[in-house]
Image 1 (tube, helix red, strand yellow):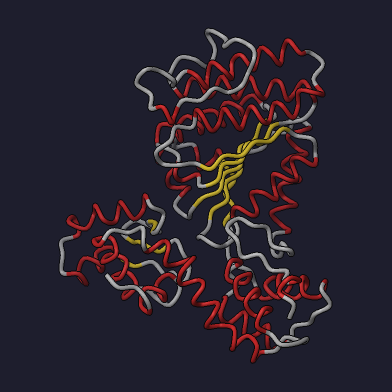
Image 2: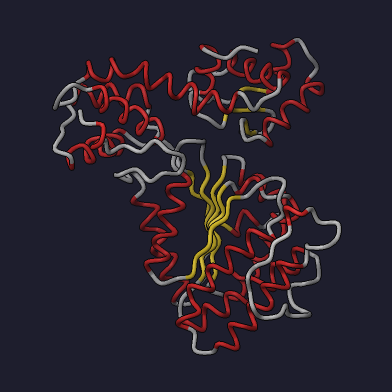
Length: 398
């Protein structure tokens, strides 16, 4: 098959040619946008799921929906070592700039930009690292007495309320998209929850859409007890058989190529419907297939190459981030877990390694911070990456 015409896209956050299996989430978000635009109460949205299930792709698709409705939008990717001030201010600046040409009162917009500048610069001082300093490119002077206390919770509430007011003037809303939401530092998580709570209480047209790993709801709940009612949680999982088939067959059909049913059977068996694996195996199978139609033998011939690419780029790169002690913990998990991503008791890991559970806490906590594992429920631990246990049993060495 012509590799130039290969339609599959196994990149990080890269939208596949066929966004299959996400129609319900897209339709629900359309309802959210319409309700907020009409002044109806709605909750902010949180997407959770394992690595490789397409959370970032869906987050970008939801942002496109908001842009299509002429909303102001901004997006950030959270980092555990970075406060929300700088990235959130930058994202909100972008969102308001999208609304400015339609606003009838330039002075009101300038007033908000002054508040935004004060918020952004509040963390810039002599003790701030040079890499954290940021000049927002706003010509108006920083405002005084609004969103500039230095208390991130107070400041963020005031900032988002003012931003929502600007959007309401235009008759639309603002949507802020936060990827890797579980990595937001704890004080900032609390501030973001408080801001969303205030926005909800006032019925203001600003919505936060977050995406993160399966333990994100627990992170939010630990910050604010009311977060369980504050957000609508949507679990993003692997594709069912019909959606996985569409993700493979429809892009190929657009290129005049057909998959035999046996080939689709074989692909679902090896990918289990995980969107990233569907794209990875689809791409390699296309490149290795000699002619149309693509058959089951083509899948079997291509599988070792796809597995090798995943071993280096998807699994290996994550394993290399772990320290020797963390790798020992991961391999113990792999020995105890099932063939995909089942949770294992932390006590069993300690028993397997012949160690006291308390002595393994630093390694476990560090792995959680690195996003390699998560606490599925109290007393258990699981991989954030599907099939990671299989990779570790077959390839990884301490």
